[in-house]
Amino acid sequence: MAKPTQSRLGRGLGALITSGTTPAKTPAPVAPSTPAASAVAAAPVAKPVVPDGLTGYREIATAQIEPNPYQPRKEFLPEQLNDLVESIRAEGLLQPIVVRQVGDKFQLIAGERRWRAFQQLKIKSIPARVMTSSDASSASLAMIENLQRADLNPLEEAHGYASLIRDFDLTQEAASQRVGKGRATVANSLRLLSLEAELQGYVGKGLLSVGHAKVLLGVENSAERIVVARRALEQGLSVRALEELLKQKSAVSGGAPGKTRKLPTATSTALADVEKRLTSHLGARTSLKHSPKRGRIIIEYHGNEDLSRVLEKIGVTL
Image 1: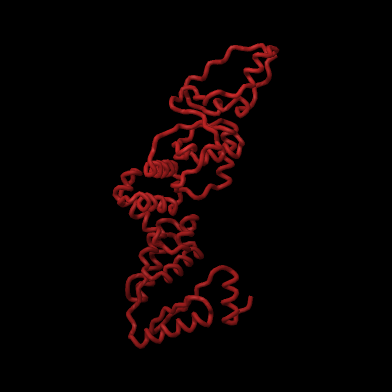
Image 2 (image 1 turned 180 degrees about the horizontal axis):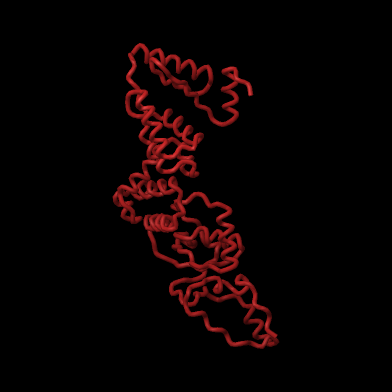
């Protein structure tokens, strides 16, 4: 009697691809008691198996594959990878990876999560399409694949564009053409990189939207921009509410957001001296926002321990 059907992972890697094409022909039955047949069944595959109906694809050892150095996506969330692992375990691999040969290795162009899932499943080879591609083309294709799958967060997308421009000496126009995006889209994305590292972190983690970032870019003063961003987070301000907040601040200061009225030279000198003394006393960068009727002191700190130290300096105990 024939043995019960095993899971997809136990039937060989060719069964891991669902191509939507005509299934492979069922092999003729072989008598299980024949020693020669057992030897053939146990023998390793002599050459890569091309999945049925997928011309140009072959199986490559997962150990021979290395990541794309131009991969724009930097975060691979464990829960998403685990979901993919379970999907491949249950349904098989729906789309082979794409690689190019570099020396005696194969470098990923598209499909790093799929490759990582196969590693996690401890499968020794994976279906792949081998392409001839330059560094620039490989970087562009990696960007395109991630953009089409909506896998990149806004900061990863911005860094991806910046990498294309910087590493391959492209203009914004040329980079936008390579990835099939409008020049304005690329330019607006690159503007995110002019935000402070703290604000980039908020946008990258989805705590602030690209809409919030665009509004904050209108605040020219860096320290004030950080303060406003923190306030938007603390109060859960929408993009429109953030715009209204900056309009109100502009009305109070009598100028554009992030700008203050020009103070007399003597006052500016005195304020600069106070800022310097406060910074020295607290051991933390301090700035003053001053007007004849109101003002505020902004103290920067780095982490909980630094905050506790600053609070202790100003006589606040927790």
